[in-house]
Length: 314
Image 1 (cartoon, rainbow, N blue to C red):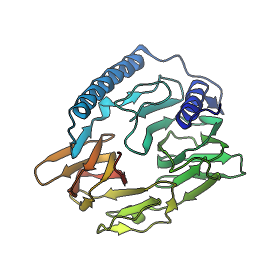
Image 2 (cartoon, helix red, strand yellow):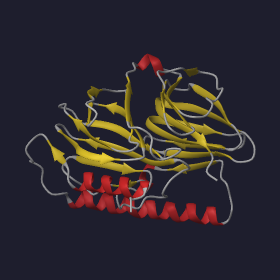
Image 3 (cartoon, rainbow, N blue to C red):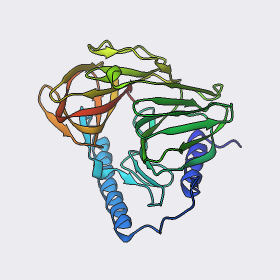
Image 4 (spheres, rainbow, N blue to C red):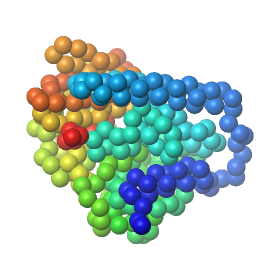
């Protein structure tokens, strides 16, 4: 019997995390007790947050804005070369929930110099990496190889099967967001794509980083990008906004979005509430039976954020 999509990919992720690859000699010591304590604290916070979410779901409540604090994210087991914060259950680590509609994985990864995820297989997953700092190098079994920096995106449709590696070949720590989306069906042909951007492309704009099978929201301030297409009804936007810059958006009825404050701070406003996000915080945004009007306002130090818009989970 063929393994399921989630079984296959989570097993792959677990193996990749458990067997790190380094291009420099292993000089690090075992995880410190402080690091282990931080991991334990984050795991407890994630469990508490997950319990709150489960209780709300059981009561039938749909919250238009749900804050996901950074300290509620699950931490990977401390290693010499990797620190990863999981927004969703991943590689045997319990986070606050398993998925948000088609969104299955959002990992905020820090990879030290000359190290990374060695060659490993994937299948039937739409995977993209958004580089925040440093350089991320991709190499795969289709012969693709390239290294990209801040603000760039790498995309992999694993489809019927592909092997790839993600390495930090530079001398500085690389931070990137790795995101997995469940495809609209299994069995797509594997493909790779990438797009290179400068700050001006997303500065005080909503840069349309990735598109999908559905329509693009008609919001003001959208900057069309090179727009790699995902095999799912999803749109991904990023912005690097100056202090007090405001983006007004409307989620159509039956749509939802996952908002990640990558750097800086951000205020999420509705007609009757305001939720403040700090660096690495996230928010779930849901327009249930009617449109949801939102304002996204950059804080005192500005805001670098990602917005993943999709159809609402049934």
